[in-house]
Structure formats: structure tokens, C-alpha cells
Amino acid sequence: MKSTLDITVQADGWADCAALAETALQAAAAQLDSPREGELSLVLSDDAQLRVLNRTYRQKDKPTNVLSFPQTGPLLGDIVLARETLAREAEEKSVSFEAHLTHLIIHGWLHLQGFDHQTEAEAREMEAVEIAALRRLGIDNPYQVSDD
Image (cartoon, rainbow, N blue to C red; front, side, top):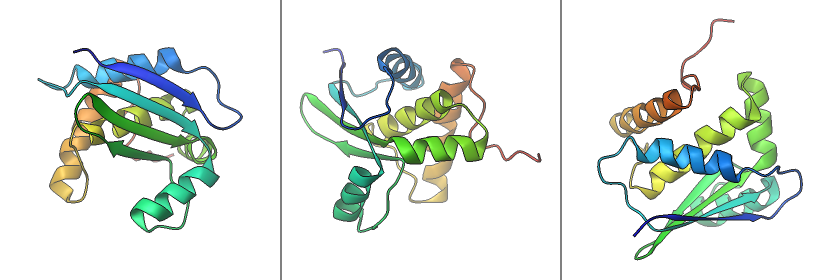
């Protein structure tokens, strides 16, 4: 079975990012020997919704950039993104909105593949896959600290 992508826009301000999402997911999948396939839902939302989800599922009463909700069977899961947090972080990091969005889609998808970053070792492993996928797309390492 091949993966399918369903994009739902729940907030204003999002541009069409279907091609960007497909490209990001292909780059991430190319880094894994046997990626889990299935139906993937990408939800383009806002800080208010991500705050509710973050409070409900992670007991953190603040917005976050991305949340992933793995599923079973033919459903791979959901990736939910907050536009305002994503835009603010992109500006703080001096990267384009599109590059940061690409990174967060890859990050969220890796969570659906079973990756996590609860320990230093897990974080290093997950970040290495993210960096390699982003490199395929000509996007710089998002974890590299600039001396500017």
C-alpha cells in the first residue's frame, strides 16, 4: 500500500503547501529502509488549536509548532502545525517559512514512524535523519547554531 496525504486547512494565512509537503515526505521516506505507509493527515492550524491539543495530550498549556498523533492499521496518523509559532520560529532562526515548514513536516512524520527525542541518543538519531532528508532538499541543518 502506498501512503496518501490529506491536507486540511483549519486556519487563515496558510498558502497551498501540497507540493512542499509531498516533497518533504518523499525526502524523509528516502532516509528509511522500510518506512511505515498509510493514510497521513496534515492539519494546517493555528496557535489556539495547538495550545488546546498540547494541553490536552501533553499537559503543556502553551502552543507548540507541531504535534503528531500516530495511528494504527491503514492510518499512519496526523501531523498538526501552528502557523503563528512556525512563522515566529522561522524568523527567529533566520530561515524561510517554507524551509522551517519542511523541517517540521519531516519531524512530525518521523514521530509517526516511531522516532522520538526523549533521550539524548533518541534525539541524535532523529535529528540525523531530519538533517539528511533536509540536505536532499538543499535545506541547511536546522540544529546547527550560527555564530552571527
